[in-house]
Amino acid sequence: MSDGVVRVGETVRRPLRAHSPAVHGLLRHLEAVGFDGAPRVLGVDGR
Image 1: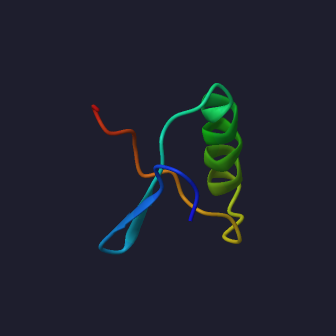
Image 2: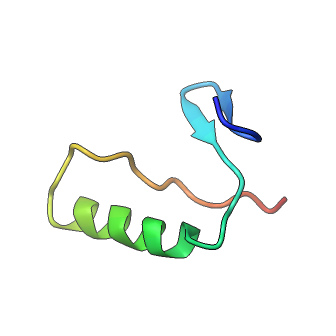
């Protein structure tokens, strides 16, 4: 895995990057329109 990426149970957590808000927006849009072939954004840790 990449630096800072860890699996916790059934989830994968990765550090936020400059592009993270755009990626999260795209993934949330895909979920909203019913596309189930992309990962879901579960949230952002407070770290």
